[in-house]
Length: 288
Length: 288
Image (cartoon, rainbow over all chains, first blue to last red; front, top):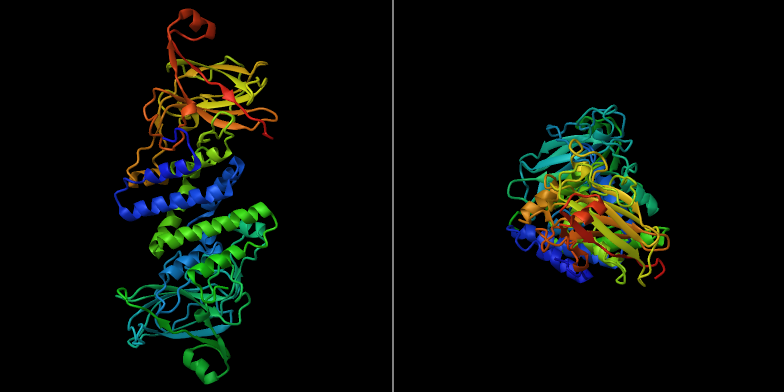
């Protein structure tokens, strides 16, 4: 009981209230959250009105979350928390991870190697190739590759259900026996994260721009390997050096080279000229 | 750009992204929130799955918020944050403040001194009296007193709209020329905070009970004085030494004395016997 509460007395009492939590990790999380939040509040010394504004902001973020929009992920992104979590979970011997982002919310349609994920046909044609290896460089046959991206106007299918068929820009591929993968698409555009919600208000208050450089999302998985969540970034995209969510890492920037060879285009089943990006994916073992 | 993000590099980059925030307090808040959240995440080292669970939890808290329920206030309460904010904002020369709680969401009906706030009539009759003074003990004439409480079953009007008329248990009073106030009510019950939402799940995971000792909420205001948000706690209530939201302070515990004097009862307009609580309210000047 905070019979005569002091600022440090309250945090000790609140932290101690979780002492009986049976699960050790849950107890650790609840007590760390309590201590860090109290440290934040003691540093900022909010007025009652400011505390109410914080409650209102978090409530608005929650109310902005729908089955096709995740405003708390956006908030985590613009504070650099999502990138930090990926950094913590990246094995330095494999491909660098980066943020999941808020648009991995529908199941990607299963597609065959070489298929296109572009169901519209108006963007710059593009071929993405790559090879999945382990940390020694040995191929990982049959690795699964879940890819998703926006269209040439910067929108994901779930954002424009009237203009894009479901599954546009998405595909779930299985690498071949040499770990190789290949799919057709269009070059994605840079785009603003959604700014019409409370996180947009936060960026506006801070005079921060909302743009992300063009990228293709990818989750690579294989039995016994650590799952990898990352992006390929388009090297010549605007905002490549100023991502609103701090997700760009040097190893993830890929040249989308223009290829003007009609034979090559025919071989890939795309018009000429097209762009070609090659992205090696290096996974690491779960127990490594 | 987190070109080769390190854990501390990400926090510096994210904090620096707020350097251009025009409003100095907003800048301070955003940078402190960023630094403390990063420190929490670096300490806990969450997996991607744990981060998703945190996002899901906050989303569920947001979705549980309605015009008559504030789950983020509940979350702040059970973590001791609300009590900390009140402790920070309490002037030690006045009456101790305590949490606002989630039920101050409708306007209290204006009532005359001596009126009842109980519109049901089935609880233990009670008279509350008091006197509003400044920090020197001089009366504060015309101070406003906004009071709200649950009924004898532990429910606020907004929680049981089918059983309680709106405004039951609520009243907005104006102290007389001597700073005195007086109203009739019923003795409130101890009660559990709502446990059917995500905060209830958190308490359950921590094996914490959800009960608050019986109390009457009060906001006292007067021109030139700091507003005071506090409770009167019923001294003999269960959970007086184990409030789920850490809000009890010794100076706020009040004896609800039984009075069996029919003349006294008649004078107050209540049946005999009744309970009587006297609560002196000491405000402090804005500039003090």
